[in-house]
Image (tube, rainbow, N blue to C red):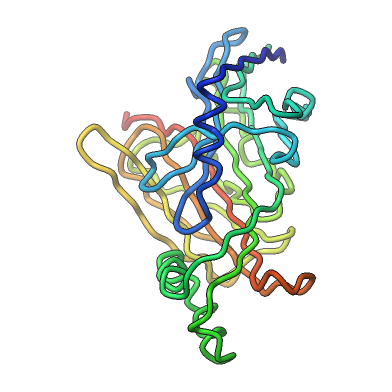
Length: 276
């Protein structure tokens, strides 16, 4: 696998603006275009933040990125050395793959903090299926106080290099909160049901809302599922094209008097083949 790096000043300014967005109902995802590159041809990797699967690019430096890796059948490579340090940021990363097959691009961020007004915080919690946190705040008598949150992002993108899917998209990357395919989305087609697992720190996570987003020419579709007692969920995906799945898990913070809640965000993007 070979890589090359591109930077531009305009991308840096956009990145700074986009990364300043808080966690309140803003999805974060990893995009690789094209998602089925030919061996030796580049796929351009970008980070994105936004709502309704419409976003802006997010630049990244080592101040933001914990890790950037690519996993394939029997192999793993670290791309972190390409993430710039200092004031320069990475608006896009062209990645070239030497051999055909499934590849998993995996990114993890460092923690960031945000403070939201009580009403806005509760609306965000409800939208992300985190009503248990609302009840905890009510029981503690803190429902009227601002939400002081520390959030971390994990994102994955699946690629079928050379149009070949070999099952490596089901590999576990070991992210803090991770959406893991149990059946290969790269081998599926529109109308198929695809199974997934959600794990937090390596353990199945039950009762978490998962949203699946698809943006077409005329409309944006969102499907919802909740993980079962084993942390698994299934989605019948009706359309071909790029899908983005996202989930949020939140726990009480215990190590800082300035932070009340730790949230962990996970996303997975892949291109589903059109119906045969």
